[in-house]
Length: 244
Image 1 (cartoon, rainbow, N blue to C red):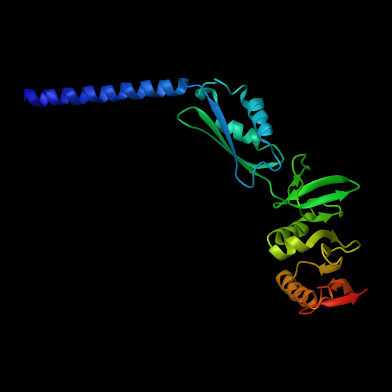
Image 2: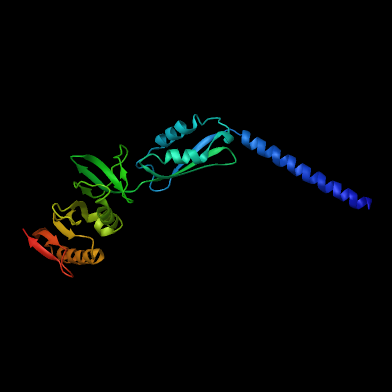
């Protein structure tokens, strides 16, 4: 009986000891000072946002990071604040046991550059506006068309298609909406050959692109690339061209 009683006491003492050690560790961990900041860019390095910019955003939200207690850092608020930057799509901020602050930045991906009398900017793959960057200039199609939230959906769809296709990404340097038409009709400007591609609307887009690739393969193989002024893809299952 006494032996069983002693076992219960030992078990209770063990629980108390574990609780004390846990509380002590938690208290020491909360008092641990932030020692360093590690910033990682998830998609392609610091193209549009520099390490210095991210550091400044963190300091604006959190105050000086050096020797700041871990319990004083609100990670959710910091993430939301950093994501207000127009160049940043997503921010993940965490802390390690050693007190290091980790920041994983996903930058926005521009697919179209706009330059007209209203100004210049980028549009990203989601159709959100981005300012131009002093750090990096993206090699993406240019448009002089005037875009807004109502008419940019189709041109962004086409720009995404171009960016994700190896052939089109190398060949297409411009996308413009044909003026005077209510529906979205587009012309494409080429890098090699100086042709204008009359793309039309986005109906049968995959078929049009397939026909364009076949046509280019033929004219590049027979050396007649520079003979053509326009390449019209609006007609079903055919490519209609005009020569210089």
